[in-house]
Length: 407
Image (cartoon, rainbow, N blue to C red):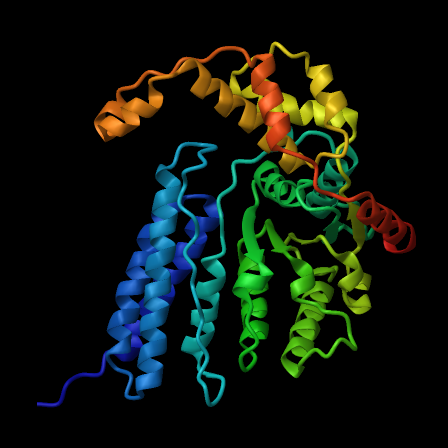
């Protein structure tokens, strides 16, 4: 008896399940999205059985695994407390191309979209969690307002769809992107360029296209491209044909996001510590190029308040002294400084803590921590441990570049 070929029916069910998963994500219902992604994975595994070609069968199984990983991540994020730092990291989904040629069937496109969805990340960061950078926050909020607000009949108003953040390491570029998505209730795609994009047989270009396609479907969305200079080396620096194709694809996507007829709001935020390495063609596509400098005194005070006072701690050393002594520190270094002082205080007022650790997990879990205001010795210990690392010559280079290309 000849077996009945149900592949068309199974694939149609798969497409419906995946569509429902994306609709649930758009609504913010992560539990339902996880359920539909699991259903998509089950159907794709069934669909893989009908593949006669081993390569196609493997692609379908890889896609099913990607859906399962996305479902697991969404379930973990749904159960994590708001603002938790222990929420699971997104799965590292690796898309593999054939060593002989790039796959071109519809299933392969689905695989790339699954990989793009794996870059979706929950963020609980809000504007209030960032000290300083008020002008930058206002520019981003204005872009969102112009994109979504109803315009007068017959009037076209251009909105900001692409921003490049540049400046020294640790100044809050990633935090700004996360706060943008969190404060605007937008889908947040956090892409570390050097980790995600590869150069094999057009794989990078297809992943970029899939990323922006998914972002449009989940609009409003923020696509954050960190370590942006890894994606776009300056022309003439010996880049390969694959790198040129990546640049061309990204140019096309950025141009498409500025289309006046596209109702989807996708804000692309690139971030780099080395803006002078970027391709001029890419630079011209960013409507705003914003220098994120080391924090000034007011910003340092706000950052220290976030990491000390808003976390329930007090300090016997006046906050003004902290501010005065931290000129030249980045936001990340200020956070490290506050944490070093807090950790020193915890160990100082809890001498039995390490003994509890030696007695085992149960004893450690039952240990009740004590806290005190940060004393002078805690603060001095922190300053001895955490030093500013941005050299003055580098700051001068940023200022010169900002004068020539910033805007």
